[in-house]
Image 1: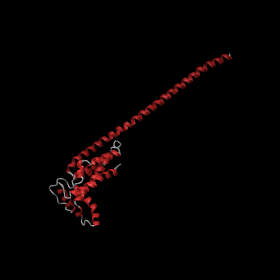
Image 2: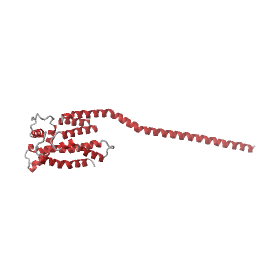
Image 3: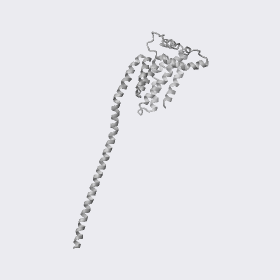
Image 4: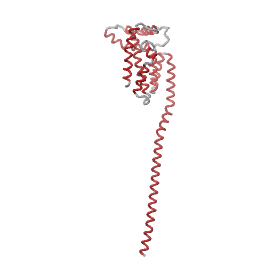
Length: 261
């Protein structure tokens, strides 16, 4: 159980379902009629082109450029595609979210792993797989929408904040806003949790130190009291023994004196 298990389990349904969706829905579906042509414009290098019907920033399209660039050398070598814009097909663009869905499941796992030992590896794996099946997340995994990429960016921002890497969290948060402008709410949320963590962490650490030191101090005090009591009892026994010796020695001395007389 662990990261590899989460990635493998999630991939087991993403790959076949993605193939099924692309075989049935071969043309852009719903809002894909706006997103896919816009991404293809970016693949052609036409970054000044913009569809006014699109209400989200272009973060997903930049991710798609990186994603498509991975497939381009392979498709060029096998002779299927002769130019980069030809690689940006509906299937390739949709597969961007498939990869991001696996990434989301891994981010879920990493976040749950931060809660050890309350959540062990088995539970973290199970919870991550269940969240990957969340209906809204699952549905948009197989289409070219901004939802999955947006969730991945927000999760990455939150995970970096939990690990106290606030600079990385801020950078990922900025990218999350470029992905979807409404993510500014999540950026503020993570920023507030980071501020609270910075403020209260020293107090928690001090409380933990006091909690750990208190039993040690008590044990040390009890040990000191024990040794003090033992020393006092030893002194009492020595004094008592000395007194007894004196009591026994005095009659003997008197008797010896009498006999001499």
